[in-house]
Image 1 (cartoon, rainbow, N blue to C red):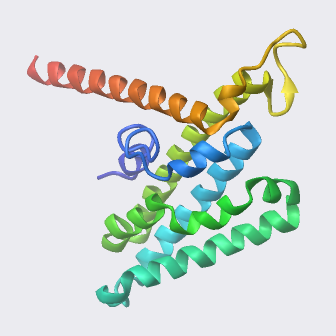
Image 2: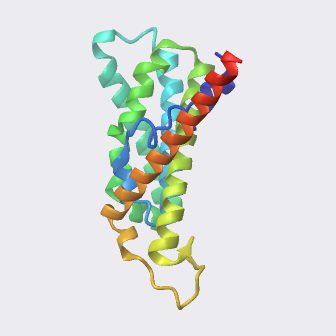
Image 3: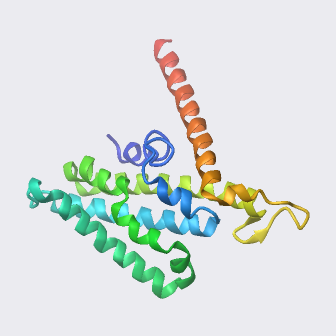
Length: 206
């Protein structure tokens, strides 16, 4: 499999949120604004890519019986680095993301990629797998946060878009609104993927 195919599968075919439905907690909690959603997306992308590389490097020296604790230790170390950087240089974002930054350690998608892919492949493919999955997560977080902030607050990155006459739909900045929005977006991505697969099969039969 080429590096491009490894990378691109995380965008649509195996998108962490829209297809695999993993790590939905931050998608519900921190996507009230674009800035928060993008920051969390970038953090997860950094952690999953770095962890994949580390796991791929040490995979031959780790006893299979203790591999999960080793993976979690690696993830926790990388997340701590990300937290310290945000706390030092972006304290407002660090405070806004709060406990959800620490919860990145137990995000299912990060541990899953370490177990399913990085522990069985070389450094370069593992890098592209982590980067692709992380980028897919970032795209999903950006899409959700743009819609939620626009409809729920009438702003984009904190700047008014619809003017003073707009009456925000406050439901969109609450977790139930996010849950319904993600449900519709998951259905939309699945429908699009199904149509792509049908088209691919028809072209193969022709």
